Image 1 (cartoon, rainbow, N blue to C red):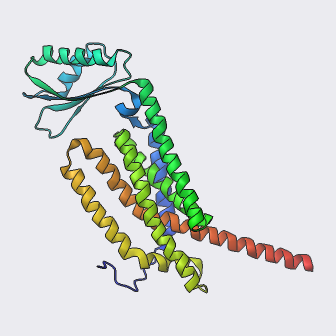
Image 2: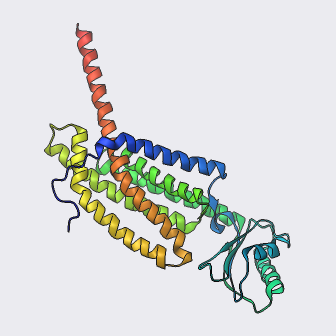
Image 3: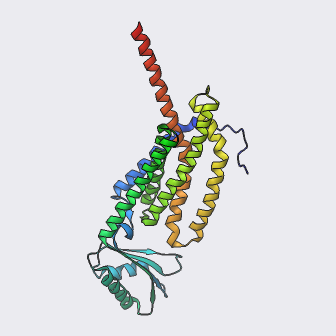
Length: 314
């Protein structure tokens, strides 16, 4: 099955500078959002605290629930509507509490029962993470992403050349930063499932990039007389059908998870959707242009050295 007919010659490379401006703008917005917000919005996994999923059998307003807990002096309390707006189901989070978490859970349940009635609610889920454990998980999550990128850099350098590895790593950093930036702009939580999503995005993106790189290397041998930008453009067009088929079929699955998987998996699926779209884009407009830029700089350096040698002989 082919979405794109063989022989298509779309001028992708022609727009690489416009794509660089777009990517730079998105990365700048992501970084600014993170700086303004003081870093990512870490979930319970990384910040520590207690998270309770509470379902009320009668309509309850978010403000009333927040006030009931804030008046007890628990510190920062975050209340979010969970699931359908028609259902009175909430995620209640108390962050970085110095109180023993197990006793805090009992106190919170007692306050809610006293305020809204002993049989008016059901605690459907509780998660507790101590501040030290949260900090350790955050550190290990960052290291997992870093080690994945180092491993990919080493593999592509061995499998291809360093110029290809550099393009792939810059594309992966591009994808990860924009994904985290979108979460920051929307004030969505970064937790362990999101780290898993970022690692999945890295694997997906590098797989797509390697397919394009393999065709570029193959065409560099076949059509040596063509300039590097022509070779890259031909290679992208030749792999375009495969790239679109892979991305679209993956998006159908991830989109189904996003729409039908429920609120628990919502952010994970959302991160994957961003990563697939941005990863497909970066394979064409980040990784490949880096190879072109490398070759252009290398060619100018050789010409300058040749000119210097001729001048020296005179």
